[in-house]
Amino acid sequence: MKIEIRAKKKFGQHFLVDIEIAEKIANSLSYSNYDRILEVGPGTGVLTQFLMKKSAELHAIELDNESIPVLQSKFPEISNRLYNEDLLKWNEPQIFKENKFALIGNYPYNISTQILFWMLSRRSQIPEMVGMFQKEVGVRISSEPGNKNYGITSVLTQAYYDVEYLFSVGPESFNPPPRVQSGVIRLKKKSTEPKIEYDILKLIVKTAFNQRRKTLRNALKSLNFVTNKVLDTVSGQRAEQLSVDQFISLSQSFKNVI
Ligand code: SAH
Image (cartoon, rainbow, N blue to C red; front, side):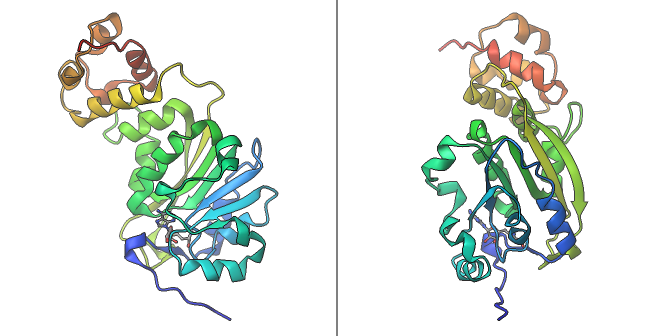
């Protein structure tokens, strides 16, 4: 029996139709250092069919309740590991709070940056991530300093993960075709975390890039930074000129006057 699902715009649905690409995405995880994988937005299960064959235990979260019976009939083995929820509002089962897992998916592009932030706030549980993003977003995450694509997502992700842009995928590989190019990236957690509170790093990076044309002295004014050596050294520069390590040092030096 073939069950058709009509793609819904509100869920950012663009189903992958190129099986080779689906397999290539599934093969991009290393499957080492964790026993579980979480697929976000399996849809009709194009990627799921390959992830099922891997040794790690597959879990999948899908918002669209029309997809659920389709997935259950195609993959009865994972019926009790299929969650009909919104990832961003999900109170994940304890196993995901205590154990390591890899994140994978052909993500809904309307929330792909939020998925990235979801991952960053759970980074101690997530040693690896492979995902299809809108190409522009994938390029931004993997960008280096000095480049106009270098921004908030680049710095915050690269502070904790080594990022690789793997390959691009054209609209013809999807049904319906998206209006944009897509790109697959892989993130591997760095062996050591920088000694900095994530929320402080996030605050500084966001504030710096929100006024990216200004020098840091002006862009960071609203934070009432207590002047210090690190700040003095970089204050004449703009956010996009600073390396990830410099953002980390700047955040470590952060004290403010209230
Ligand atoms: N992996 C499938 C579908 C990709 S489209 C394929 O490659 O063909 C993105 C999928 O994410 C859709 O199935 C959509 O319903 C689902 N989705 C959208 N928002 C979601 C959310 N907040 N949480 C979980 N899944 C979501």
